[in-house]
Image (cartoon, rainbow, N blue to C red; front, side, top):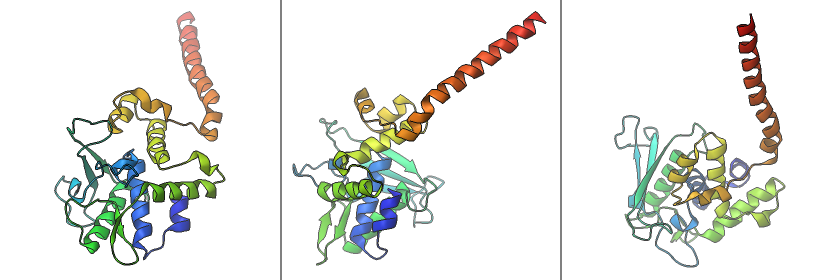
Length: 231
């Protein structure tokens, strides 16, 4: 994500910022593509302008970007919510100046305001060269993800818009979140999300050493206790 931002985002290009903001929200909220982008199936699961809100550190509505400490998304429906019960998810600032769900969402909000977006319009939108509102599409997001993968020397064929959802789940898990947290936050009805989690080479290298580290810690503790009892 960060490499894509550094190599692609132009400060004054609203389309670039809309793509970036959509990617960041998809990653942090583990969004399905249909929940923020237009799809060939033309589903209506996408987040609307009225479904996004911001609060300050006291939980009150944020009046500006500086006050915004949390962003809240309301999901009216989704692939896994056929009854359209709806649900909400919230995230706070990540601490990173560009890769942050709150700042990304605020940027999308500003773009929408400048276009004159209405409450029921898609939240992840941008103006085309003629100033016409366009919803970010799955094709655009997939192309951006593939570009980022290529920049890292990875096979782009293995990456798509879904990589943001699976990548978000992976980082939550590797960051120490419990299985239950990942499943509930990502709105998976089962443990099917586990099939999406990927462990990269650097972390894989550390697995055996971490396993032995824990073993050695327990072994030395037990050995010390045994010696203490003998004494």
